[in-house]
Length: 462
Image (cartoon, rainbow, N blue to C red; front, side, top):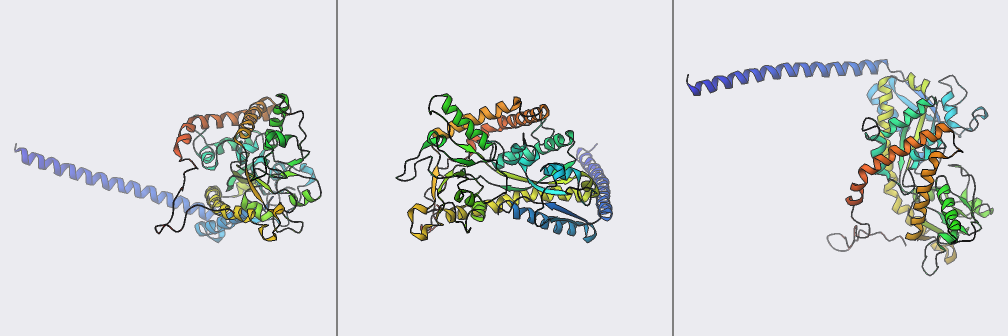
């Protein structure tokens, strides 16, 4: 047989076979696409428009308004995808209602009971701080742990296959624990925000120009009342107790008030003598809530030393919690949009918040410069490295001790231990990369300028 002809014949046969395979494959692929489109259209047709009222908890610029923006985004996308008959509308209840007495100020229980749509006396949904999900372990899903993963690192835990040997996400774990404990809610992350400031104090911990810092030891001995949200409160308290136990200071004098997220004017509390030290949130939030008030601002009332880094809260993620009966009224397509738009908005709100922090920090630090009273000026202070190490050590002690804290229920201890261990395993598998991936902040943007050498990339805060 002619080898050339034999080769051509095989080539022709292979070509025919390939063409036949491609035709069959395209047919199957087309059928699959058609089936998917039909399924989506059927889901869209079965979707009924739903109005869900929700309770909010904060007016802070980087926290509260983005929740309303999530609602607007979801309404727009659900209308585009499913038509007006299938749109999902979250409506903020205004003014913010009190949590009914029957639920003992527990908004999770109130949402679990449901509101008008669910036929209950609570709420159909609520926008909450992640720490609200559970007093024992909710802070891990709200702001992580002090000295722990930052936003992008925690996002890998929350959305990535980071739990149960790579079979589930941290968000899956959260929902499983809520379900196991019978909370009757769906938790949807919807807003992200960046590092917070770590305190407005009446005296600086680190050196502030010609003013010597009092250090952590000096801070612990001040006769101050603090507003510090847990777990930062617990860590700072333990760090002071460690100094007493080590004989570094004779006693701890600072004390704490019960902090309520989103509640009260901190500046007025200082003028009333109820507070001498507090942390609030990011520069964007601080500018919106602590300045431009009739009673003054942090500088004019004496708490003019603003501390960084935000060791206590490396990010913030807030959640929309939805009653399960209300959730089940949504079609699969609507549920998918609630979740996917939520995930998208965590990222976009974080980006929007982050893009404003530098300008807002500068606004804060220069807020009182015009009055020509040096004693009112806001001053940026860095925690001394040695004091940060003491706070880190106290953080480790707090996190580990909480696993067996008898003030918590046995179930909370167990759930907390499970979440903490999941986070530890995730961090240990990635921390080697995190340590080496970034250029040192000391040389980032160093000496960068525009092509003409006129405009620097550095920001002057004062």
